[in-house]
Image (cartoon, rainbow, N blue to C red; front, side, top):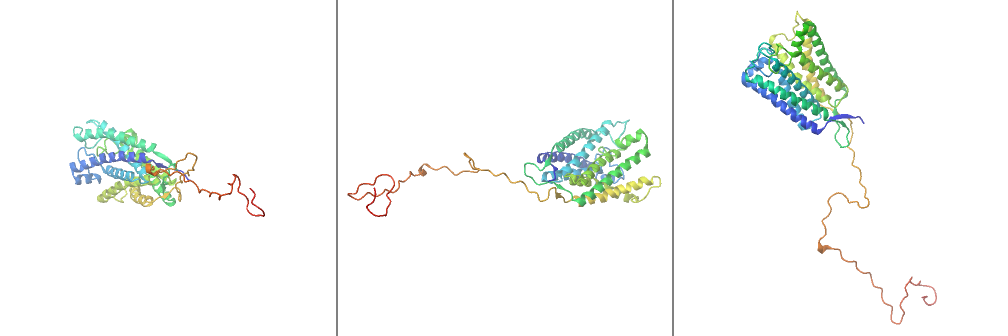
Length: 379
């Protein structure tokens, strides 16, 4: 029988609770920006038309993060088999956001600017910094719970087998995720070659001076996180692992909103399929990336929506039979004790043999005489 791994119930519930707190944090700052700057300003910022306002907290990546966090919470509490992968994607991306926010808000000053439009004296700035510390600890705790909560299957306790992707779906999803990882590697190498110098590395991977919101991720840091997740997801899909479906659907949930917003922004600017004269290679790569994110995410949803059991036709083992032994008491409730008036009656005497007729001596003890033959009976 093939062996696999599955997330234990306690770890799934604990991870879902942590992810629910993470979702509430993300949703709070999304609601803050909508109430503070208005839906139009936030939409313009998400589609690349500008910055929502001073100390804007959320961005388009946070929108996708909130969706995958909520999906992971629902899957965890509903007991879905894909909950483990969804929780892993949501926790990893939240942890990356917390690390970036701690670095950028902790180092931003009037002379050492990390954000394009931020004011340290305003209330949200300090609240976001303190919140990133709690976010870091909570996401780290959730990651430890998920890692320690993996259990091998089958186990002594009977349970349904984990689900894995079908053979054809696993190969196609592995190729899609592998293509995303390859594009991320090529893009990072291209940016490093064209930029050059230590300042370019700081801007690319730390976002110094180019961040548009307080929780924005540096382009290179975001690319590294997506590279790690897509690489692990591709390997898990090709191996038909138990977490492959959750990882693939979690990545699709994160990448699809960003891809849709990118297409809207490029179409609005009239540069959807335009090749730049100054950097044609980078333009072609960017087009391939957003097309792969958009169409690949839809393909991942379609291919990974349904899985198959690791061991088809497997049935839980029947409990061992219990044999009676001296002093064995059968399981289950016993009948009520008898009342005092229901005590068993004493044994009744058997039939009394008839007495011999008068004048005949009594029969001696021993075996009865044998009847038949000639002559008088033998005593």
